[in-house]
Length: 233
Image 1 (spheres, rainbow, N blue to C red):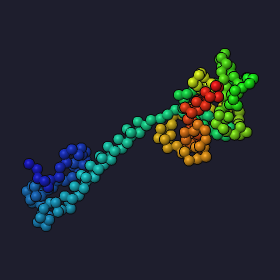
Image 2: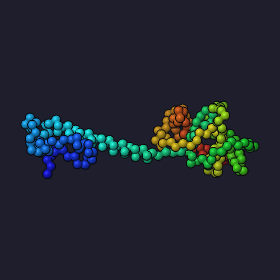
Image 3: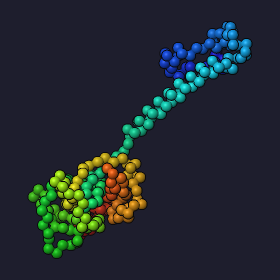
Image 4: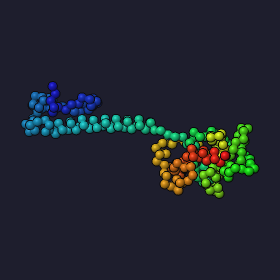
């Protein structure tokens, strides 16, 4: 039967080096051994001896290290469970925007836009030919209330594109000045997106986040698609 004063190393998963480094003299020549330790007369009991205290500290340090390892492992597992949302990043003039890919059908090369007589809204630019089908073409600049005179970046490697998005009554085309691509954004970043900037109160905007060193407006696709439907009515 073990004494309550004895140090219990069970369950601490000590390495061979640790166990060899700890001299359990209290069990050999101390109060739990043959009591031949020359320091016993001075300290009366092993628990008052610095050797016993140092051994206890060593065991506690080892236990704390194991707890840190378990915590680091749990943190790593939590990081592996990060939820992301896919956004298509594109530019209109000088402004970068992001929209959920779930409402995106395709990114297509820029096509000629044919205007219509008696167009129903200022946002309706006309129709474009997409693989033999005429598709309504809308201006996001007009829908979002952006500055139509802002030219933004230009260069030989920057190519305008057309986004084909899935509206309620069928696909529509919106021309954009540049497409950066589809990016997975951490849900926590989106939830923390600023809503206090000058863009936060803009139309169809869920928030503003920092992305690649620039401010990016995260569009509310539900409100935007609703506005698209109204523009075609």
